[in-house]
Amino acid sequence: MIRDRGKRLLLLAGSGESRALAQALAWREGVTLEVRLARPMRGRAFPVAATTGGFGGAEGFRAFLDDWKPDAVIDATHPYAESITARTAGICRSLGLPLLHHERAPWQATKGDDWVEIDSPEACRSLIPEGACVFLGTGRAGLERFGCLEGRRVICRQLDAADGPFPFEGGEFIVSVPPFSVEAEMRLFHRLEVDWLVVKNAGGEGARPKLDAARAMGLPVAMLARPPEPEGVTRAETLQAAMDWIEAL
Image 1 (cartoon, rainbow, N blue to C red):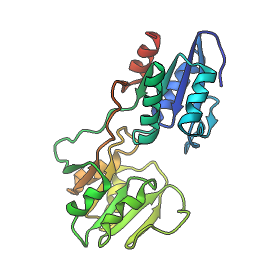
Image 2: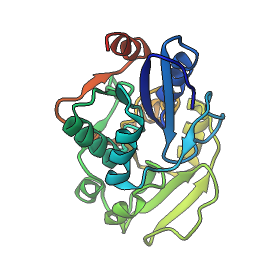
Image 3: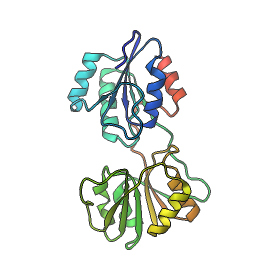
């Protein structure tokens, strides 16, 4: 936690955008910054001091806000941290506390992309034919919801060894460490004989190569749409927009 006089900001971190924003705010005059991470982030250490762990549910979060009394909250968790985002929005709204949702823009299909937007993992059942080889680029969280893909060969890429068996038959883990180039993704998809990709619309550049590889190979992509934004929450897609919102507080 970084102490200074002036605006007191609570940053709920977890995305690449949260790293950049924390760094921009860390030594900014007139800002007191408290950074919270639900869990440790992979890769580089977080650029400023951060407390790891939850608040103890909704009541714990409300109690923290009552005690620390921030002037505003910035939700820069992962775009698919739906429960955290919804809880944060509801409690901030009830307290009349300014809230900014800071997340990068989603990907947009361009010429040559073969994307089908889906609202839930369960929609894959009717979209992807039995016998297909499916590459899941969605991460481990919520993997059991893709049990609707039984009857297909399902491959889920992980950044480290799985801590248990695949949650349904026909699935397997592979372990790979980023960054991944377009060429490397194409070689991997060719070797695995992938027929379909399933991807969360996380946006950004880090995970983009698999989509570029799919376009080059003519592979269809089931694109899992982002959760709906909570009502009445201001959204900033860029660092500059987030900083402008903070300046205007």
